[in-house]
Length: 123
Image 1 (cartoon, one colour):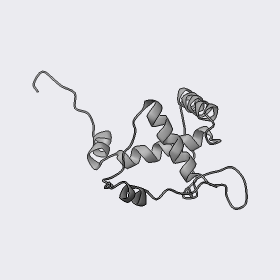
Image 2 (cartoon, helix red, strand yellow):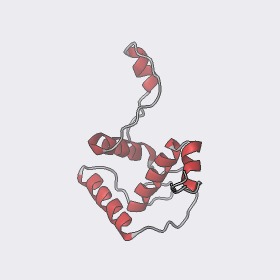
Image 3 (tube, one colour):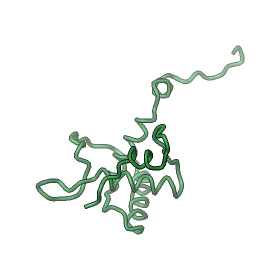
Image 4 (cartoon, helix red, strand yellow):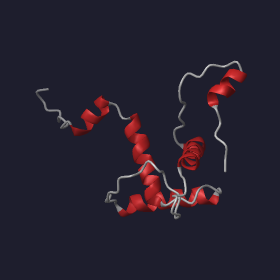
């Protein structure tokens, strides 16, 4: 079992100050951040079974395009190649949905539902 790091204690020991969370985007560092999140969140349920996030209590069906599922499967295969957690494509989808909704501002959400105006000659 991995021990949790106390980031406040580490920062204090280095004479540093924590100013917030840094998130990686895409590419290698984004993939490594995603893998770290998975390993930190997923636990084996007390009754046994596949590792999952204990906070996930809601179960819903999520329709996907075949190309989206294929992309999720490719990413999961790469995570497994690098010795990461045994992850399923829909678990990855759930994590990506959570991360995206955390970053989405109210204005971004309103922009998604607001009808787009098409430019006309009188505009």
